[in-house]
View 1 (tube, each protein chain N blue to C red):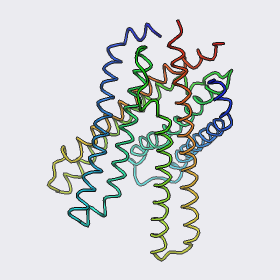
View 2 (view 1 turned 90 degrees about the horizontal axis):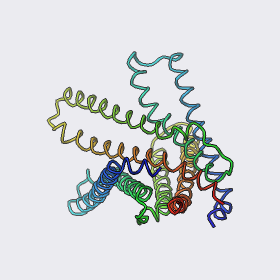
View 3 (view 1 turned 45 degrees about the horizontal axis):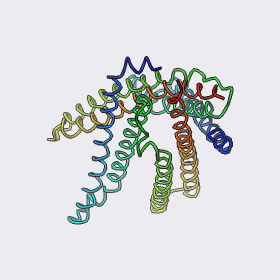
View 4 (view 1 turned 60 degrees about the horizontal axis):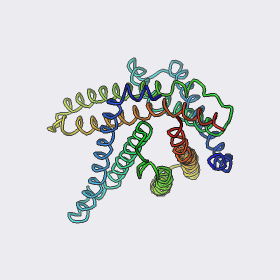
Length: 166
Length: 171
């Protein structure tokens, strides 16, 4: 029954796979071009690259790996002899690393916002206006991503186990 | 696998509760932000609120989606680790939620494109036809990619539940 459903939608699933793969590789190509072009063209200052790298990782590298991971996961479901590659095997570790970056980004942007508010002289409470809402949202986002990592680690063996069943 | 579950049962239970709580917090915040902005915008008719309401609504829908995602993952964790539990509502209809999300981003894309084209036509710039085309084509390509990947994830979710169910019945 399940295999029939997969066979029926195989073309569509393959299309999804190819699109995920294409955009994942496109993002990686974009990151490589950016990293090569920065030293050649030059940025506004020395601290520019230090600020840029976490943003590139959060905004481009991780989404690229996410897309390639989704491609692998769907392939794992539709291709009978498929062996998961390193992106899928270490998917949970990628996700845990991403959550660390999320936390670092939150701390960094909080410090930056604090400095900006102090220098502008606005009379607003930093903690209530910015830190608490963004802190709650980041914390929940981290929880969700760790959950996805835990699930990924368990789901891949289950899929492979189901393929061996007659 | 079962040994792992037994060893980490407390952690998994804590994780399930934390995710569920977080999901509900986000869902409540999202719905409240929607309600507050609609009530304030209609009763007070403050220009600033009306002007920023689209952004707040977008933020609210972001919170609602993350809330649903959190609740769905919590249910999937429980379903995976607790052999007696049944798939919850969000999990059973997870693919439909994803398809709805794709429709929502399609509507948002159309609204944003209309706004952008209106804005571009209101300012006097050179090569405006080229700008229209590049903006529209970029957003359509990005939407198609995002939409197809999300539909793929929805299809995956639909297939994975029977596989997990099957694995639970194995000795």
